[in-house]
Length: 180
Image 1 (cartoon, one colour):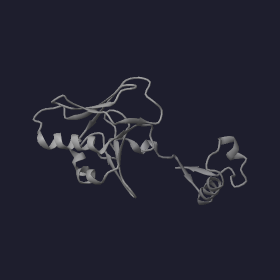
Image 2: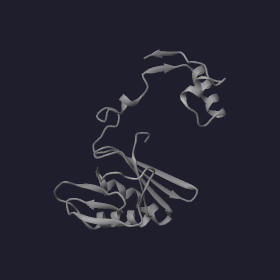
Image 3: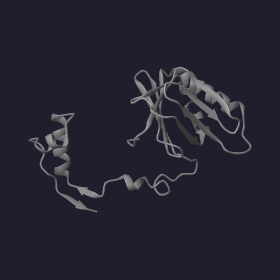
Image 4: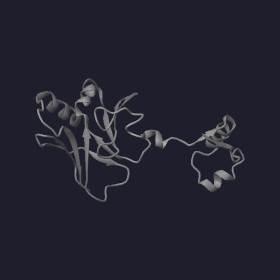
């Protein structure tokens, strides 16, 4: 979820419309995707394939930097969204973190004091550890407990800093890292 993403804020009714259409229809042939069509300055369009049914999310908004170019992002395994169906009545806001076509997506449903995050793999049969190669994003070095404590102390003293100011911070000393 820390990878760069396009974050789309949806009204809970938009999620309800997607779930409702998925309950009404059963696809017999592919492609079986939920496609997000994002245009700068336009509301998001969600297209249910293979029927090409367009749902325009008029109350949607891209969170963060505005779009500079049109994007089309496909999500596979859309029927798994039905797990969120019971939360829609309580939801105040739904955010979708779209990493890209065929990549994982994260659906964050806010319900007052409670927030539920559902992470969906980019395709239905994904073993998160091998085929997706997400293990390549992990660190390559062993970090000592002392180095972790020093980083935590530096973060407690300054929540926002530049790399040069971190190096000069009193709590921070260059940690010793051992290759794995």
